[in-house]
Length: 265
Image (tube, rainbow, N blue to C red; front, side, top):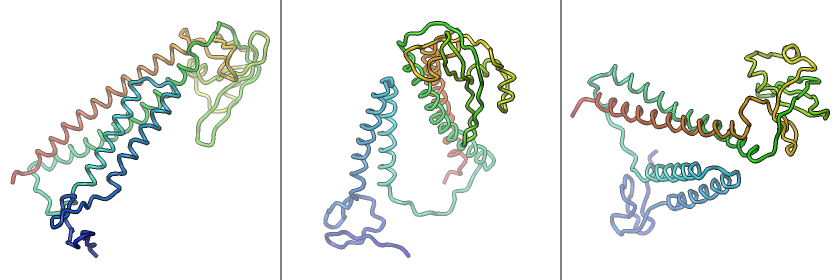
């Protein structure tokens, strides 16, 4: 059953109307939701900006997120204001094979853009938090002597590798994942981990006495954790933005190619 919309003032049938005013009396017929969407946008920008300022995100990332929110809101508002087109017969194709390949390429590029946004953001956030966690913290080179290793498999499939031991005669804890990764070894259970990192193993570390928990003992890779996190954050941003630009460019070209596959009227 087709619903009919009418002007609240004069009762004119507004089905299929393409303007925001009644053609008979001029009364505005724009839904309030279209005005409220901009208020929601301001709230989103304020909340995201406050969060990113608290966690000391770079200004460029704050600006990028704000632009993305504005762009998404404008696109949503534009889509809602467009009249719903009446479906007609499909246009004939001059190159159906090319059309199919272009459509597949468009889907792949769209998926790539989502992946770059999602995984690039996660990688950047992790590196950014690590950078600022260790930035300016006093440390010195030391050794972690392993007493016992632990293998814990999480409910979501993740694996936590850590060890108890001593640093300069005091009991400490250490995350073993970076050390195991540096050995290029595969660990499937606690037995594998115990064989790879037996008791009395000495691991060179950066020791941060002012921090707590496993954050105090970090594997000595030749690059301090703060500098390592800084480099990783910049690389994640650079490669993520490059991937987005390349994917968006290819997507634009494929859209043009697919449009050229239709026969001219």
